[in-house]
Amino acid sequence: MQKRYPEWVNTQVVMKAIKMRDQGILSKQLNLWIENLLEIENRDN
Image 1 (cartoon, rainbow, N blue to C red):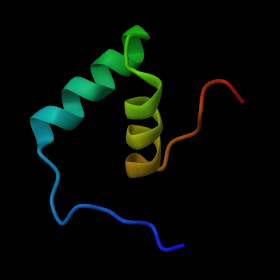
Image 2: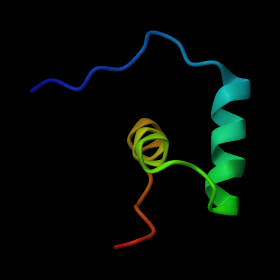
Image 3: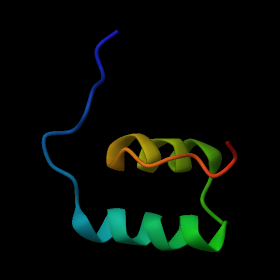
Image 4: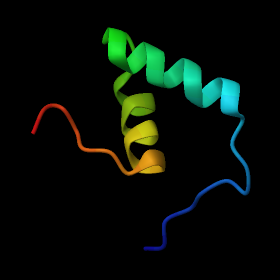
């Protein structure tokens, strides 16, 4: 299955998601989205 990414991403939304992830308050689904989008490692592993 091919990964689907938006053609553009709103920088403010990504920055807010990163801050919320750092605070541990990002929903599981959005956390997976930001990890996949930015190709970062999952903290739980």
